[in-house]
Image 1: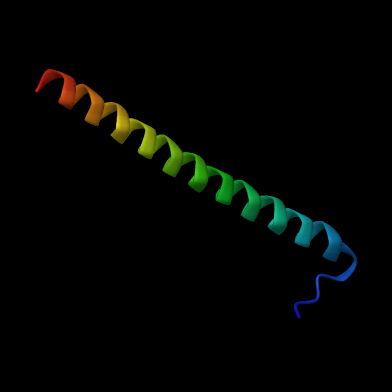
Image 2 (image 1 turned 90 degrees about the vertical axis):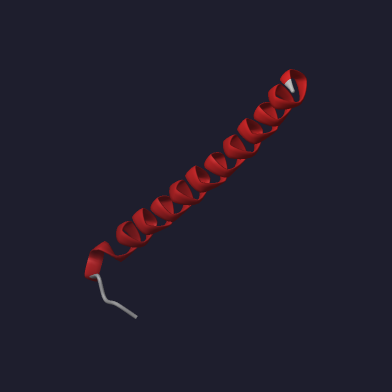
Length: 48
């Protein structure tokens, strides 16, 4: 394991926060993409 000395907790905590935020952004992007595709499909079906 990498030795960060006395800063080990803070470094790993920052890694954890970063991974969590990136995962949240990916999930949010996928969710918004699906919603946009559904709205587009509804509009296209309505307008022919």
